[in-house]
Length: 219
Image (cartoon, rainbow, N blue to C red; front, top):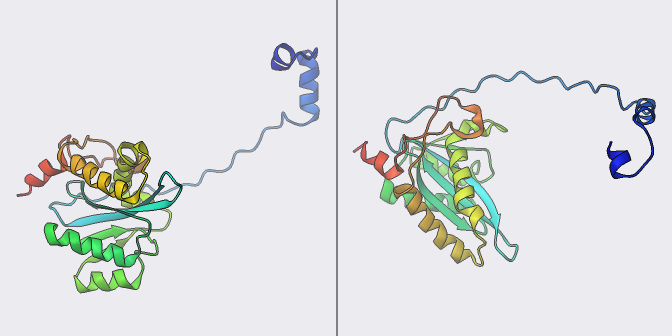
């Protein structure tokens, strides 16, 4: 129909089908065998603040094309964004400095869940964790669902802030990160949704309240 009515060729459907078969386009492609995957273990829900934090990086760029990165830190208990550090480069030293700044006002976590990025497997971060008696929990490579709380949070950061603006300067991005983070923690209800990637069934948000309200329940 497309060849005759749109392209203007006078071929009828019988001729098209005959050529189609001669080119062996009618042969069925054998589907790939699906791999059987084990059902992932659901993430534990912390009972109190500072029991487990999650960390991850995100990438974006300024209006002039220069690449920027963000370091996102989340308290798994109340899904509170503890930090959005924004800069052109965020090496392990910067990660350690940001963690120390958070601890000054929030207290120290028992554990921090991270992936296997170079900043997280560096000796500096490991030394810091050992010194502060903080357990680093590394997820398995290629399994972001094991860090689903921060992955879900990253999607919110991207959809509601980072992907909504074009930043002219790094200072502008840093200022807006601070403003958005305050709104997220204090004004934006955390709607109950299945946690990231549709792989961790049964884990839900914090019941449609804000992270700040959830934190008060632990007081």
